[in-house]
Amino acid sequence: SQTIHQWPATLVQPVGSPLSLECTVEGTSNPNLYWYRQAAGRGLQLLFYSVGIGQISSEVPQNLSASRPQDRQFILSSKKLLLSDSGFYLCAWRPGQPNSPLHFGNGTRLTVT
Amino acid sequence: AQSVTQLDSQVPVFEEAPVELRCNYSSSVSVYLFWYVQYPNQGLQLLLKYLSGSTLVKGINGFEAEFNKSQTSFHLRKPSVHISDTAEYFCAVRNSGYSTLTFGKGTMLLVSP
Image (tube, rainbow over all chains, first blue to last red; front, side):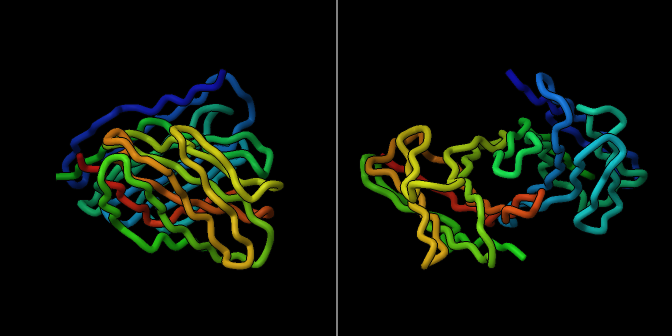
C-alpha cells in the first residue's frame, strides 16, 4: 500500500534562517505531488505542485521554492524565512488519474520567531 | 476557474443530534467533489468523494453527502454525531481538466455532550 512521510513534525526557526521540509511517498510511481500551507481561519493554500521529476508549478509568489529531485521526493525550501511563513505545511500526493483524491501527510508545524 | 464556499466557519451541535455542513462550488465544467476531515495537528483524511453516478455518496464514519448539480452544492450530513466527530471539515473541488484541488476554508464541527 502507499504511504506518505513528511518531516519534521514541528520546527521552530528564527527569521532569516533557511528552511527545508521533506516529503516522500512509498508504494507508487510517478505520483502528482503537492505542497499546501494552512493558516488559521484561511483554509488550505496550494503552494506548489509537480506532475513529474523536475516539473514544478508555483501557484502563489512566495519566498518559498520547491524541488523534486527524485520521483517520489518533494522538498519545500526557503533561503530566508519571514515571520509570515509560519503555518502548518502539508504535503500530499495522488495518482495521475484525473478523478483520484489527494492523500495527505501528517503535516509540519512551522513557527518562525 | 473553480471555487468552493463553506458557509459556516463553525457548527456547534449536541451529541447524537443530526448535522449538515454546507458546501457550494463554482465551476463551469464537470467536477469531482471531495470532503476531508482534519483532527488537530494532523493531515487531512478523505471522508468521501463524488466522481460520477449516484448523487448520494457514503463515506467513512457514517457520513454521507449529496451532489446537487442544479444548486451546485455538495452538503455533508450525518444523522447522529459523536464527540469524536469534533474536527475541521473541508470541502474540495477539482474540474475534470485541472491537476489541482481547490479547498473551502473549512467548517469546525464542535460536538458537545
